[in-house]
Amino acid sequence: MSARLLRGARNTAVLIAGLLAGWQLLYAFAGPAALAPPLATLRYTAGLLATEAFRMHLSETMRAFAAALAIAAASGLAIGFWLGFQRFAGEVCEPMLVALYSIPKITLYPLLLLAFGLGMPAKIAFGALHGIIPVALFTINAVRNVRPILIKTGRVHRLTPVEMVWRVLFPAALPEIFTGLRVGFSLTLIGTLLGEMFAAQRGLGYLLMTAIGLHNVELIMAVTVILFVLAGAASSVLLAVDHRLHARV
Image (cartoon, rainbow, N blue to C red):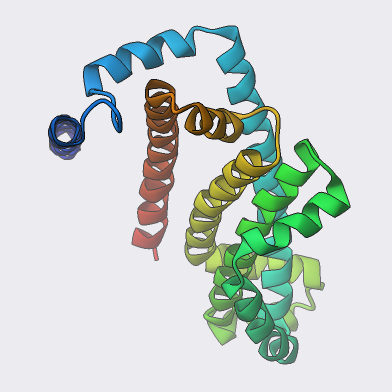
């Protein structure tokens, strides 16, 4: 186990070093008008994290994202279990979900603004819209792949639909469901940030859009680095859990 951890730490260090070296080379090629160098960006980011104004923007984004992720996960799982267990309903509705998923979500944002107005509700709705369908599609396939003998056993024991989901379907389909939740996590975060970029007055997306409008390269790079680190760390943890769940199957 220690050798595996050591190998993982070494690979992470090599990856970070490679990214910083590539960043420095790109800065040397593009110049200060397009990029900020790594060391200067890290110093600026450290100072930015210490400000109360930035922490307010970060808190706003995290609250919107947490609410959007909770809605996406709960709604996606409910839809997925229903359509996966009810074969006919799944065959009818799954193509509709796929077609809806193929629509660029940004085209629906004006409708969300009309429904929810500017502010937190619109950001939450736009973030959840990105995550619901992937979670639902993964859950549908996970439920369909559950061994029929498990479902027959549940019916023999006369389990209610809720008991069937909780005691049979969810444990058996958990690895693939978690993969859907991991994908939904990333897409919900993207949707929340996009919602902040186009119609918000607070949040990291708003801060990034403001920096772009002012051509503040240091702020653009600092916010990008913070988002990259947060998303990368969360994705690494979720991926590790995902691999562990699939290894138990």
